[in-house]
Image (cartoon, rainbow, N blue to C red):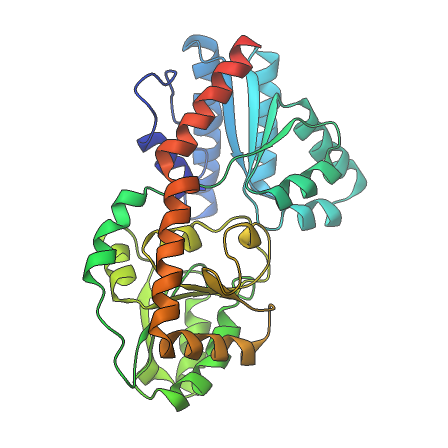
Length: 342
């Protein structure tokens, strides 16, 4: 969510409404998170009461995020503000399904009482409509600042005959398919002994390191930690393929960034991904958990330079025409004006 918010704020048009950004979450120990939640809630309500902010745009995921944002939405409405709920959670539908009946009622009411609910894709719009049939739902694709990735298109090295670089960025864990990727590496390395899988992320880092050592694939894996800024651009520049074999997704910004960087993508048809990655056109789509197909897709792309180039051009064009941050931010500002004047 943070990258989406930052991209939108940076790309706001000159005639955009006056906007105040208030954070309600930080990474860290529970005490620090609680302090941020309290301070953020007070900050939003203060802005509504004394700062004359009349629209509250809440970026919401599941569990604790829903609890924080639904409370803020309720209080903001009581103070006369109009509310927008922007749903990001890759497992929001699962969160709803597994919630007790009273919480399900609360989720439905929160969405239906908002002036607008923003979904990340058409697929997510359908899912949210099942949860809240009375909600006003529109689709706003995640943004990427396409110009930021232009240097990667000019400086990417060629693919060595026995090597190549495959990039994975995301939270390490089953949902993102990182363990399937580790299972696929030996087959790729058997065909290309100098292949390098660069893996950047957080969460289950120790477990990933343990499995890399246990399977003896350390020579083909480079752990990057959590990458951002210039380090992320450098990683995209070094890479020849981007891989995200997820089981659940919203519309992953990492995939959009890889596309903006001109990388062909190997991924799965989950969440909003099928609306941006078409099999054989700008990436290769495999079933979640299909390790054999994953390794075969990586090898196919490494071996076919014409296919990589064709997919690269298609990805850059798609991001610039549909996901470039100024375009997305302009649409959002139109909705702000409509909600305020409606």
